[in-house]
Length: 415
Ligand SMILES: Cc1cc2nc3c(=O)[nH]c(=O)nc-3n(C[C@H](O)[C@H](O)[C@H](O)COP(=O)(O)OP(=O)(O)OC[C@H]3O[C@@H](n4cnc5c(N)ncnc54)[C@H](O)[C@@H]3O)c2cc1C
Image (cartoon, rainbow, N blue to C red):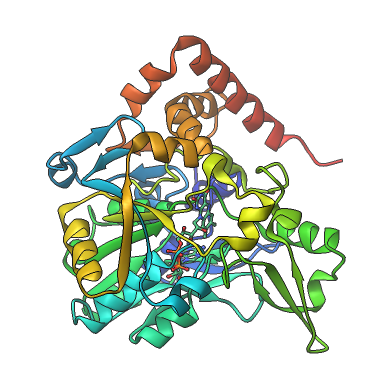
């Protein structure tokens, strides 16, 4: 296979997540990064693409390489759970600053931690994402050096977001930083750490929102149209925040804004979500590679209509590492965070039932993709065999066949 074919295989197999890491590390002469015909951010072959570049890409691309914490960190965590992984403890918490709590996606834990890291001098900058201006439903990579900049980027970006597109620039600059990015982005950075020692030297804190998948461009267009808007005339999108979860807000060309109830947009469960194929089969939405992962805390995974209007916002927080625990405790002591109560794996399972199923099915789905002749996600440091055993042969077989069918169905020509 040529290097170009190897690149195209990742995309054709539905595994590219548009994170931007490959073109960041390979450079634009080898891999450019732009929107494809479907509107998705994708790498494109440049004149210097060769097999050496593709060998690296095949080892770090989070589309089919998912890596959790390094064993030497994971193994010393006092609590080990088959589904939820290594952790020090789980808590319910929210930002101490009421404005941060209000503006953030859930309870503002990630914003509060980022502000604490900057203001305590632990790191000079936080690499994370903010709303993009063009197109306004995307997210884009950014760096915050002040609490105001962190707050301006609060909230969840559900559209395509190339969170790692600036990683090479950050590593070249040589300044330490905290990284807030989706679980798959952190998986990719754990892979890159095997090739580039600057990753573990410079990324001082690894923080993540728990993630059930993002919405591709086509999905946003469908849902904006369903809500009665021309997607091309929307100038600003806030998916959530300003309450928990807060309204979904569209700004329009004429300066007006429209707000829709979270449940009208997203549905009472995940049935109205349009997800990329790769997100549907994700084996790590729970931030296995992070020091701290922050999630919603609604039973069943979605708020009731009443709760969506009254909830001030609290995160379920998985503190995985000793570094994460020290950071969390410091932020509580500084008043940046308010710890409400302890949680355990049963609480997390009740709040995130879809993630429990995805964790158990990871390896079976990879087998199914391999059976279909597709690239298949490789799972590192994630208890993949033990989870597969716990799923059981019958359910595992069903997941495997289901993934195989889905992989074949993706390849059928559109009508
Ligand atoms: C695509 C997506 C899917 C999600 N699915 C789930 C789910 O299934 N279950 C669940 O419990 N929670 C899910 N969440 C997480 C939830 O929406 C909150 O982000 C999380 O609870 C953290 O809340 P917070 O108030 O601490 O965040 P905030 O304080 O608002 O901070 C959020 C931080 O995350 C960064 N960020 C936002 N969007 C992205 C992105 N796309 N890529 C990288 N970084 C980003 C921001 O830059 C910001 O620093 C999802 C989030 C996203 C972005």
